[in-house]
Length: 223
Image (tube, rainbow, N blue to C red; front, side, top):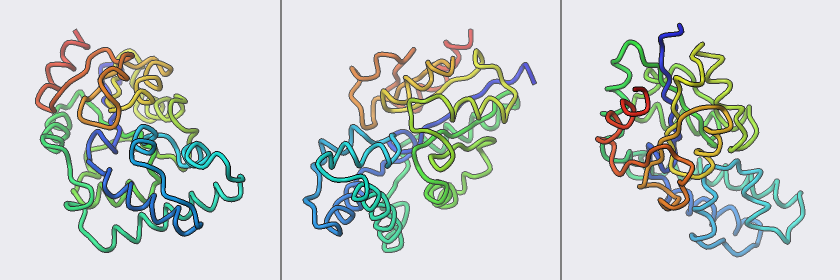
């Protein structure tokens, strides 16, 4: 399997635009605890971290018990809101995402993976909605790993696929993705359309502005 290459995608802010749903669920989760909802500019830079890391940062004056309630409240609100709408409305794919993923999947020497701060349940909903489960050989979620930027998820991707780190690339929209990639020995491609500004993606080997740039970026990294 040494000739194989591995491309691992983040989900929120990379494949799907979920910020509207994230903010609505965050507001409901905080209001359920009688707390004021955090501002968008405080929430979005944290997307990609595990909820257990996010809540203490957003509600630093609260106790660990309240933080745990906020995590559960967010998850429940997120799933309830999902039931009211459609994935295409609540979590649309970014332009070119499906074509890029399916195109890479069609290359016999390339395996695809996911490394996300989502739960298993949350990721399954997204993949099922867009019929994308079949594309990803390895799928790593927050249920079973430390939060990004710890490299645990990417180490698991390598173990699942047998690909060496020097033939692996992480694609994401946040500094957490870039730092995770470097910690695991991966190359890193940042995307400019997500939740972190381009200047926060300084650790990336390449930053792209559209999915149609991805193939050339990968070719450059694998020369």
